[in-house]
Amino acid sequence: MGVQDLSHWQPCPLPGDKTLEGRFVRLEPFDAARHSEGLFEAVCREQAEAIWQWLPLDPPESAEQFRSEYAQLIKARGWRTLVIHGLRADKLLGLFSFMRLRPEAGSAEIGAVTYGAELQRTAEATEAFYLASRHLFYDCGYRRYEWKCNHLNEPSRRAAVRYGFTFEGQFRQDMVVKGQNRDTDWYSMLDSEWPLCGRALEAWLLPENFDEAGQQKNRLEDIRERLAREEVKK
Image (cartoon, rainbow, N blue to C red; front, side):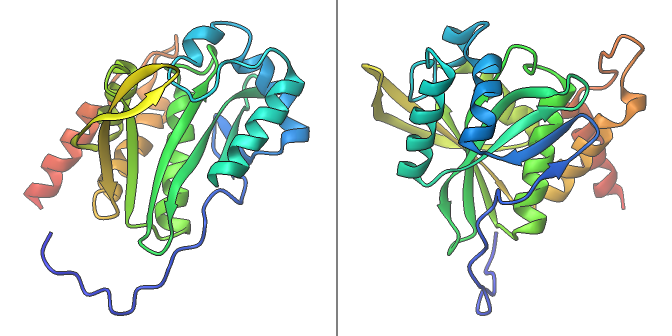
């Protein structure tokens, strides 16, 4: 990376305090009273066991339990949580949090990703990630973006690579979660890497990248590689 002059560096503002709207989704700061019922329907009904497998809580059994336990978790851990409102479905589809916040270093993690069955592997999910990432880098000026997951959580590891994160290594026997060992895989994206990743996400989300059935024509990874090659040629 070389030597960076950070003599005028100032701590970043905390992310997640504004509504972010795209073509498919709207991200809203979590409001326990307003959002808990819709989130319970989205992430605690269908496929709840699989959705909550890698999360620090078991799936709540009621909207009231969701409201109480999730609000406590956010407060205790200092998370900045955003909920995902699907514009096509006009309902809540999931949520995630900015966590391990270190504004003095310009570093934040995206985690506790809790996507309902309707949100998984959709354009809505990708746009939600894009909106959150753009907010963190451009609105808040962060330098480092982290993604961490259980090594056994293959979908999460695949998602990190798809979005453009770089694998940094593994913390062995990092945690005990729900009575099981967790080896944690660490990924990161830097502010210098975001412009390419962001442009690839924008290109992937364009209407012309989808066929009449809503299926992608070009993979995000392929678009990013093409854009990187074009940058080298300039």
